[in-house]
Length: 108
Image 1 (cartoon, rainbow, N blue to C red):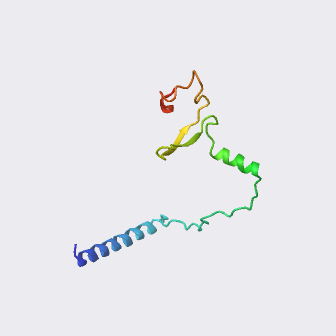
Image 2: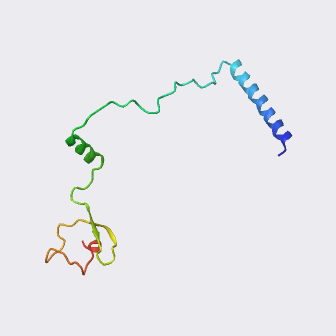
Image 3: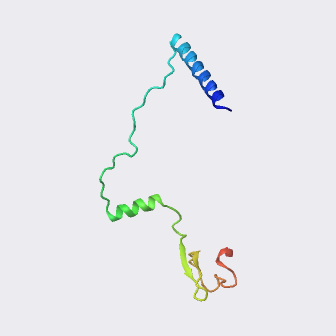
């Protein structure tokens, strides 16, 4: 599209806009959006001091999950490889845990 065609299209759109605006106003139809006051982007923070117990309770509430399941970090002495595995109350318990024959991930 050439500059003259773009300008012509723009002028036509402005004329169409003016015609439609006049038509709305002639019939008493409100078409302008009411201006809303600018809202604060961040609400004012109240200075609140929490006790250690309150902080712990807040943390637990926000990040609640299973209390009986948590990760345990491990590191291989041979390779230096590290990772996390689910904690198990039966780990290495004779008659229950079948490590190292069965991996923890495959244990029921």
